[in-house]
Length: 298
Length: 159
Ligand SMILES: [Zn+2]
Image 1 (cartoon, rainbow over the protein chains, first blue to last red):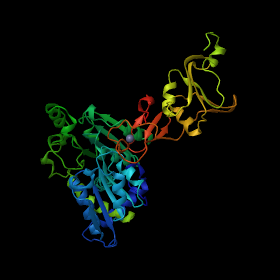
Image 2 (cartoon, chains in turn yellow, green; image 1 turned 180 degrees about the vertical axis):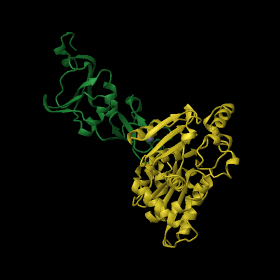
Image 3 (tube, rainbow over the protein chains, first blue to last red; image 1 turned 90 degrees about the vertical axis):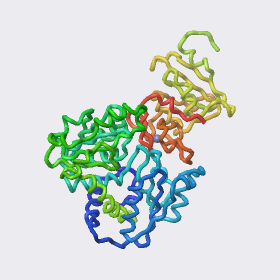
Image 4 (cartoon, each protein chain N blue to C red; image 1 turned 45 degrees about the horizontal axis):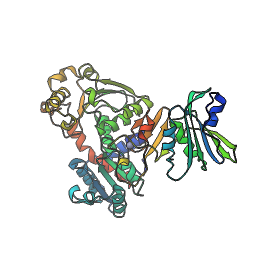
């Protein structure tokens, strides 16, 4: 893949995805590579995300490169009111590529208009998280396949940026997507619009039970407390959109369960030791996949 | 002002202009929105005449806007298509219609509409204009993807 910026999963073609996943497979092992010893990656995390940040750090270091970051958001110039446009123009002078996590939708897109180095969107509000999608796809390909796939995507589909990116990327493959959520957290209209435009096979549900037996992959996301004004309402909804070991009796023997992590109560820990659990493997895949992506950009 | 009811005279209600632009066949009731989209509020001294809900053979009731001393650019005219798809634009020079245009849907509108998504980066204090791609049935924020399919007037950026 040769894109200057990685902003949304919508920009990925099937060929782009396959190229990154194939290359990731080469990096998926103990042997590192030091082909990018002169590369410096700028980590701009305006919102805390230890895991994504550490995953990028590990990836660039295993390629022989290094990172710079802005420290905690509290101590940075953000709190002094500097615009994002100014920040990225300054850091561009220090780094060969920028990884941006920002609470506002469209932040990475805007940042990309102000700099000449590649901008990698590592999450923009409720918008997109395309590098998570690449590691999700890598994990799906390892456990199931990307074509002739029936996937259930459950939880917070409205604010879940990982869901938005994954759903868009899956339109490149022969896949049926079943979306399961409370009505108040259903897919936003713009994501549904893209899926319809792409001619994707999509069904929306409020209940997992009827679709569970058909699924090859169940992708679970966390429902956040702050989406509900009332604690009881949150508890009622959260407990309904999880999966436990007993429910797996209804599932295919080779169902893979995924989750972008961290989880709270959505996945019964009793599932961890079963062959269904793919979420820790999924998290580990972040490094080789990001190595592959960085290798293609730097 | 004339007090005749004959349709032919409705054009005259708002008077002829010498040099400028006549925007005709605006959807009834949308004239003020048209002016807002064009950023015309009379504060720079333009002479503006507005007729609202006048009878029209073509579209039932229509609005008509005349702006003396200003020729609209094609870009400005194109943005009108969002709310006044039937509008015709007459550029007037020395009392004669020198050019006649229909509005056409542009591929994007920049700096005209503000994004209704409060979490969109364009609503922050950043040095970017709002930008919407024009779709078949609405517009879409280039930054956050939010769709606007109706009530465009509610999202016009007020300077
Ligand atoms: Zn927006």
